[in-house]
Image (tube, rainbow, N blue to C red; front, side, top):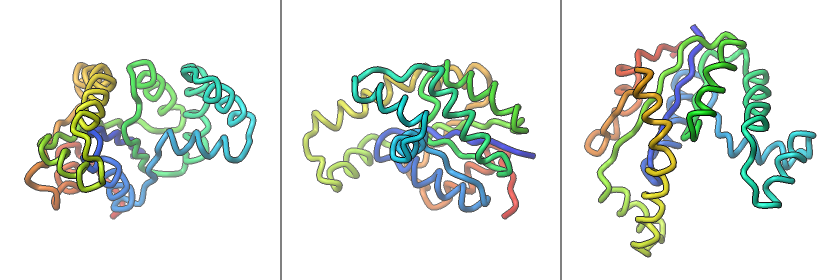
Amino acid sequence: MKQILIIYGPPYSGSSHTGLQIADYYKGVSLSVSDLMRKEVREKSKLGSLLSSYIQKGQVIPLSVTEQLLYESFKQHQNEELLVFINFPKNTSEAESVAEIAPLFGYQNINTVSLVINEQMIIERMQQANTHDVEAIWEKLESYYTNISFVINHYEETGILQVIDFSENVNFLVEEISKSTGLKGTS
């Protein structure tokens, strides 16, 4: 069964690393919408030119453009059994777009995981990465929680959100996500 896993986590929580690990473990593909946008811009595709014009003007990228990018990504990876999105979708409109586009390519099962980590651990990781400005750290965390809270609530209301606290048990995170979501693969 073709599946989608969406992983959310605050900055320096390890959500990107975890998404990559799960994609690798299950022989799936990890998709970062930011990376997909940069690729389109770099390749100077028609979609890339459109994205570039919004970015250069400092404008928000319209949902229709994001949907086009999603559609092209699903089309490109339609033979994959597992797609892992990391910190995307960022709002309920994008979440609804994923839910509408996914079945067109045979993806019927969507699982969402919100990684929760002790904020002190995040601060320590940011400081190790030379982000020593405590105010900047709190601003990044506040921005993440503010921006992502609506889509997290959306997934919670639809009943497909699993919350996993991995402050203590980082080593077994792939196993914990697999168990809590029922994720299956070819591993």
